[in-house]
Length: 98
Image (cartoon, rainbow, N blue to C red; front, top):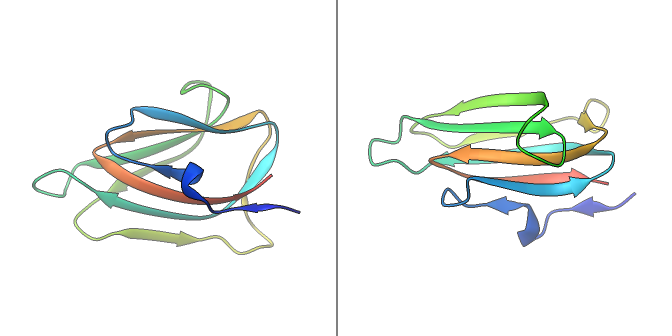
């Protein structure tokens, strides 16, 4: 098992989409913060793919308060093809295992 929590799993709001992994793995935690001036319109979409298309794993609307999702080790969010994150006005940090 190898846990990834380094800078490669940070997706700044200025990045439209980012491939985090190819192949299978698990998401253990997500931290997201809206970056718009009114802090009400951030969105994070995670895809089980090596592009920002295909099977959607999660769509998360992010508001004024940071969103922290800590997935239990027994129930992580699983991806098989790869993991791509698409952000809109949102800074995101994701802890994964691959």
